[in-house]
Length: 279
Image 1 (cartoon, rainbow, N blue to C red):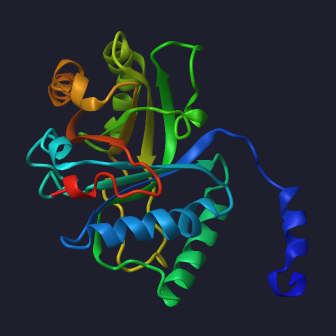
Image 2 (spheres, helix red, strand yellow):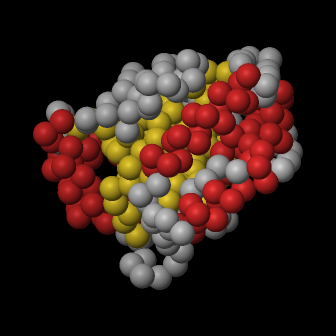
């Protein structure tokens, strides 16, 4: 087996390159199972793909799945979204952290393993990728300063909800100014006294040319920022007070526009707990 799997190479690679715990990169993927395939999709992802197509890969060190029931999807805005058409599309969200400085290494493996999984009939085809992108970490803003979990804990800590927010800057040259406004002014103000413990901010990167054909190329690479709000409360309990009006605040800044605000709750691994509530 050692000759077949080149086991000795692993010992050599372990001694090379970055190996910190900072989430320098992320995979953020929002998917819609085709109607009538919800149970099959959930079981495939939970029982096989979450592990074989994600967590078993080098340098992907944390992951979590989230679900948006029909009730949660009805809270999304704006209705005319450039991310999801209709804005309610995308029942499931998966989020993964990749070690800083290991994006290229991870991508070589992920392209290769997904080709193998597809060839071996281990890819569920009855699904649509609504919003799928690898992303580079730009900032994390904490509500409580140095207290509490860090961003590298976020996908393992028992947060009760997550809000995905996607913002487009007015142009490529404006994204830096938008990021600075978010980091120094907008996010600290919105986090204060809120149920959100932190917000991580990422920018999307292009998918490689040899990606799987069912995943479309990433849009907004030069203008978009992706925010993940990690909540200590169920988003339904705090939505009106804390998460309405995010689009108006960004618009007033003159630096960009909100293309999606979408709440999720954690899935329960190994169950089909929320599947009946998707439609």
